[in-house]
Image (cartoon, rainbow, N blue to C red; front, side, top):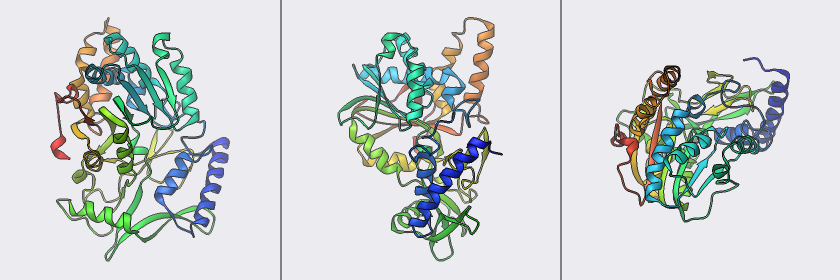
Length: 385
């Protein structure tokens, strides 16, 4: 994982920024703040700087980058919802390269279910520029429906809110179960100026969150158990529920129900780094030039939605969602054997348990829409939440 000269220089600047924050914080920086800076510091963070993130030239591949079949299936679920919401809006949070938006708009046009507007809320100015360049190539009737936002729209939205691999990038806090207390893992500066792990007693919000989730688990967690908890997920869901008058949130990400996430055998957590298509588990190296993610506790997200007045409309694996949305029908539309072979290969990567089919999930939350949704006609695991 050797950095080239530009990457090393950029990472050095991010390290300087982190060192300043560690010093200002008294020598201990909680991991949530560390992750926020490493990913989103203006002009320096991984998602704020100008490197390529997605696809073969980037650090990881998402389902929309892997195959347009994913976008077409998402569009089919959106079409069902938009049928209940005439002149509804589609709002995508964190649109990546723009490929998902492109595929959804093209499929919705073919289905004659275009939204009144396709809004994109993107925190990265660099990614927003790339999205504009890509979506400007759409037919004029489609490109004219796209607009970019700098903040969530006002309350009263009717439509569908999409978030593909957004929750996993929300900064999280890390904890360790010590014999007599709940500890917090954070970041400090070693004597040689590099980053190192440190620990202290958890503050009240973290202690309460860990104690609450541990009390709900079927098995006790052993001493020394390390994991993470995303305290930002609750206010994030609450803010989305606050703008949604009628419609649904479709949340795609990798994660698990709580009882499976915080299993005694998963004793080092789920925090993962992605750099040039290699996964590793040391977030304290390559700062600013690698992605940091943690799996999603979908039980937390579902309960946050319910507390904010939303109903759980369904929960399924990516494979279950794609089958429910009709991926088999799309495969049957291939015009020739060559295209059929290509699409079958892409579908396998999207569907197979060893690829993306089981690790990735869809959680749908909504208000004022009819259920069940077609996405869950093949599988609904809501009972596991």
